Length: 245
Image (cartoon, rainbow, N blue to C red; front, side, top):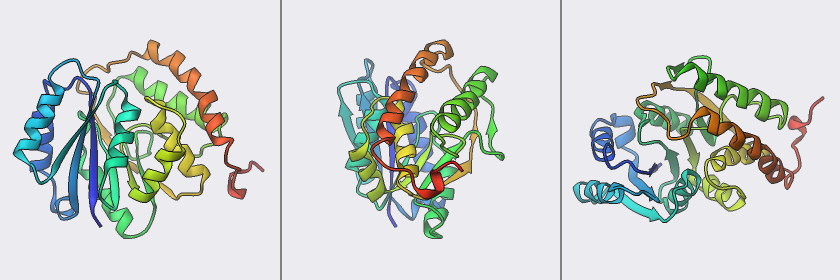
């Protein structure tokens, strides 16, 4: 088993180098023994994020790889990282949520063949979510109303940390038709529709800075994603277990 870790970076010049360096230096043995690469994907930044990525790469040239895409897009950034990955498995983290315990949990699940896709769920019964209340409410409503009631997805979260078998990850990238932030939800839903075994694990999340997009600005985006997600899923028939009784 070899693990590729993908970290998208957008306007992270102030924090990226310190965050990523500390993260790599403090990884537990369970992760370092299988870690093949850390892939930083700068996307459309207007500050010195790309320079920060290259400084990290210079410190750790055998471990860190850097890619850049011209447009600021979380979805396109993680897609680029997954497609460029060389490991047998790939994990997607975030600059302000570099969770080594999530990686260790994913590695254990893959080794025990319990799932092919691992999602760090903020809505897991054992998760600790210390984000502001309005963010937690929006997450709950999105997953209950849009994903469970309108689409039928039985999981509790599709945003955030993920670990996937690399072959599945690259296949999902090829099948996905959306971009930007909704892409991360689409690959989870596509995996579910195609019968890929998904396991959710708890995470501990503390919002250490204000999000770049406010809750009010997120609402119309959320409404616009449902049609795109349904259109993507319509290409693949429901499995017998996914048909409502």
